[in-house]
Image (tube, rainbow, N blue to C red):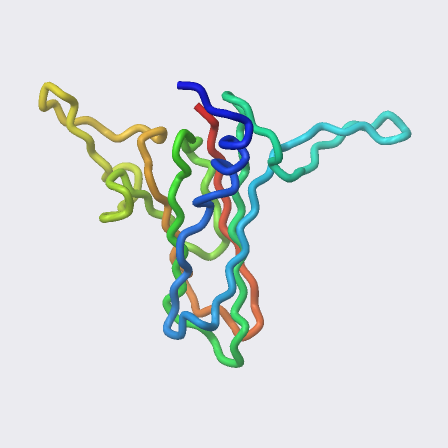
Length: 163
């Protein structure tokens, strides 16, 4: 399959984060970011890695998706969850989903059901059941373990490789 450069940019930037929900959904503001790691060398010759916007992505590149969320209301937000699809043509990198103070689950059925990786099962064409592979995950869900305080921010992050 051939993907044009314009499609790659749209692919990386589109469908980054699904909805954030809470008791009052108008309280949670969500920002989505797609970035690549870039090694830079400073004037003293010291190398470091920094994140740069994912403007051009080619097959094999690993994109770091970050979802930032903030409670803009004047009271804590209960039951905050962020549901995020793994973008089309991207393969989730096993073990890369993080989110402080969150419970992370995954879906292999486009977000209809979520579970921990060890509970996700797929059937092969011959009917044999097996553990789902990370590159088969279609969605990721982060659920805050505690209310998000008024004015507080949080984030969720994962990596995916362009196939």
